[in-house]
Amino acid sequence: VQLQASGGGLVQAGGSLRLACTVSVLTSSPSSSPSVVGWFRQAPGKEREFVAAMRWIGSRTYYEDFVKGRFTVSRDNAKNTIDLQMNSLKPEDTAVYYCAAHPQTATVVVEDARGYTSWGQGTLVTVSS
Image 1 (cartoon, helix red, strand yellow):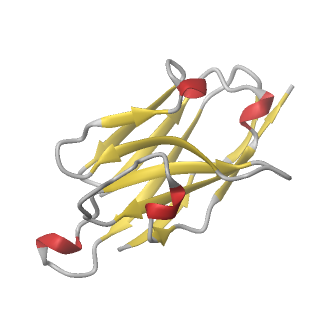
Image 2 (cartoon, helix red, strand yellow):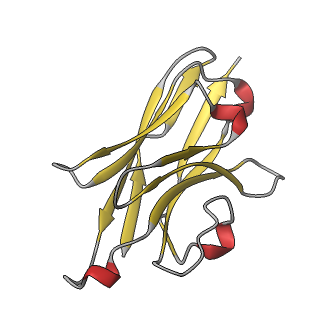
């Protein structure tokens, strides 16, 4: 699986941005599809943290508490993207945002970055106060 994140930029506090993660599954084998596509972020000097995720099949979504009600994960089948709509942005949301794919395994812990084996290059989101 190859992923590419896009859509970052500079926005004022209270504004919105929409990130897109283009997902390319390299073979037609069903087992090659990801189990979950997740969004993570890493702010300067901080650990990478989970933001949100979506099941590849079924589209169940997961959110970290600090983005619930503000961020929404959705899938655009026409563009083959997993999008992250970010509203009511705060300066503390400033970070590099990454999308990642979790393979199909017996156990999936969506919040654990260690389970994700394919990562996009990241896109910078800067929220000014």
